[in-house]
Image (cartoon, rainbow, N blue to C red; front, side):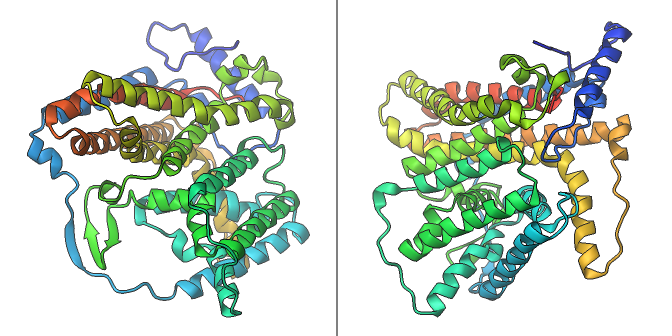
Length: 468
């Protein structure tokens, strides 16, 4: 197994520092299909990341202590909102979703007939950069953008326009399991498929996803988009983290996550979907690290391409979800044992939304370097077709320690803030479950330890050298 330190304290030999940088540079030069996960790894190895990680974990630990000490009344008021006025019905959704559908159809045609260079073809840029990097992140900040941009809503609208009505009633026992399966399939393409950015292959995969979604809409109507379409469910959940939300016909502003706090407890299937969002996001970072390559017996310096790791990555992808669910469930159960309480099922469901800030924070942090690079290619594609000025794509900010420090600290901040918000949300939910401040704090001790560990794990992932 190849291991490297993530810091270079004053006592570390210069030879070891240079060796680490050379090893990482060699790994990054190995050819292979990737999803443009830009890496500033060489400079990250030279940053005092041990100190930064310790500071991040300490801030989360301090949050746990403060939550335990804050007056109970103040804790219960944390997610109160301010009324900003009446919110009229959303207008123009049919137009924006129709335009989105036409744009996706055009991009699919370009996937088949256009340039097969992923940084020039509109389809991979729209799917992997526009949607997965920017739109998902935008939902967590600005709200449910997917409602306005989902091409699948336009498909349902066309069915209704022609008088087609749902053929079947959506079975209640299915819950959100279909959405979990479709999201798992999406993650499989993202992390396991040998060529996810090849435009012609991606065109077929997008058509398949759209076709399944259209079939589900034909059978079950709008319910399918709310329960069976994985990307839509994920973005709707992240949208509930946004501080400004429409609720009860009014615009309301509050602490991020207030909408989740004031919503009903999710079903078991939706709670597990929330945990999956964190598990799959974490594995998306883990499967690129030297540590993972060591575990699967692969030398990252001799990496021959994604086809060489399909089996191990698929296994890890399938197992990461159940493993995280078991760890989370054990933490919840341990907390109930400490306060001698029952109701494991209710606690599992009520506390699950607190996982979402962690998942979203890691998504934003993990993809920040890629967004800085791929965003330039996306702009050039848009500029080319609209006759605007194109820019020269640059990765120079990865070659300067000062800019890399800003990027890495921004990533670390996203992870730490996500965990801090998660602890706050979890404690307020525990207050509803257990009634008193003391019992809530005690019941949260195992889950808080779980979150502190996950803070350390997430920051370690960001600082680890990558081999693919």
